[in-house]
Amino acid sequence: MSKVLEVKDLCKTYVIDEYSNNVLQNVNFSMEEGEFVSIMGPSGSGKSTLLYTVSGMDDVTSGKVTFDGEELSGLSRKAMAKVRLHKMGFVFQQMYVMKKLNVMDNIVLPGYQAKKKKRSEVNLDAEALMRRLGIIETANRFSTEISGGQLQRACLCRSLINNPKMVFADEPTGALNQKASLEVIGELVKANREGTSIMMVTHSEKVASFSERVIFLVDGNIQGELYLGKLESEDDVPVRERKLRNWLMERDW
Image 1 (cartoon, rainbow, N blue to C red):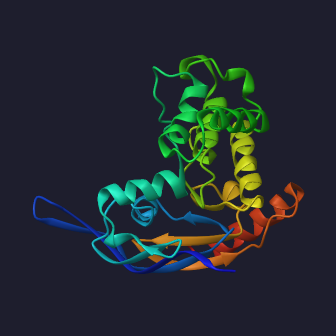
Image 2: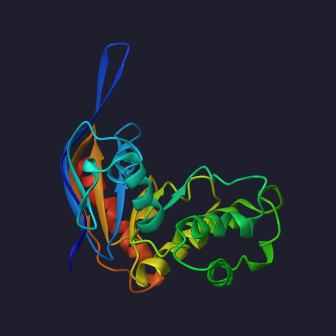
């Protein structure tokens, strides 16, 4: 299996009023195609910064990020935007949508922008995704007219509309209740089983237990990794969660 993401000696430093904040320091890891990886760590450890830098949403200070065989640091902003549109999907804790567009229009917009398919085909793909995620009835509604769980599933549909190589999810369940959280993480698992790689930032041990591997970040450094294996059944989640919790407790992070 080939690597979809390789990160070597990644550093990210923010300079504010001549004060340097080294958020990421010599981070090294890789992900195989079709892998589901969770990034955990205490608040301020650099989890979201890691996701933003490896996805090209933020510049790296030094180091190398290779995505789908292409080094991102050598790309122009226009070329990087094209990679994100065609090969990446994004889901955030804050459910960013265009409020003047209804749910269907928000989902199809990246598909129209990518111009890989006719608009009629994009519409059919969007309808299929909405049916699969159980929100087809919200197609003509606006973000203020649906629940948070429905809106996050719409954001997930949008992230998948261009059949990305990887979905980057930053605390995708952070603003949801437990029922909606499990529904959203369940859909990420389904997307992963269909071949989409997932990199997810989360503070939740339960949510992380759905993933294949957990990387733990402390003060901008990777302190450890736990391999849980592919999730065979949701009945296995409690055992995986206990394993993860015990692993974290033993290291007192």
